[in-house]
Length: 178
Image 1: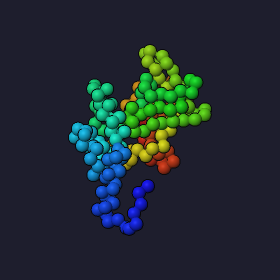
Image 2: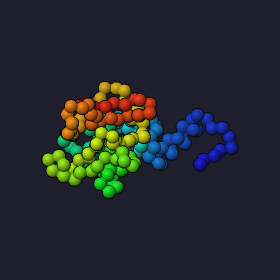
Image 3: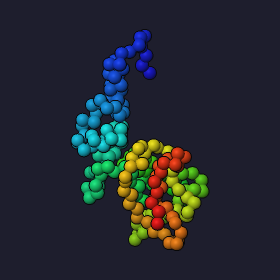
Image 4: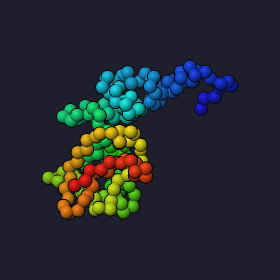
């Protein structure tokens, strides 16, 4: 808490906001901490208004995934990384970009299968299970986007969603069905 015995000028307030953004790694358009990143990462920081933690995760992701385009990458959920289990059920799944973790409780949690698709781990959803993300994915959810999923179905005649992202309560979401 910072308190003054006077009303601050807009310049004074801006100076404090930038100081705090730099000290705590928060997003502010005039913060100086983003200058430590490449211009491509700086563009992503400004576009998505990332904190330093999110920017660090993104920069690390770029190093760890040299064969995958990361420019514009919003969400990456991998069955072989960031999965939190409660027994055999998935209670949380960490987005590899560090931006949008997903969680679930109770019977709506999918099942983790260690050796499923060609010997790789997978999450199995039974049709009534899902994972939820409470974070705002921003206006990009209503813009053109590309979603890619590795999935299979045991009921090819029914419409099934392999991916559904966005704000379910506000009905601003996108899905990938087959």
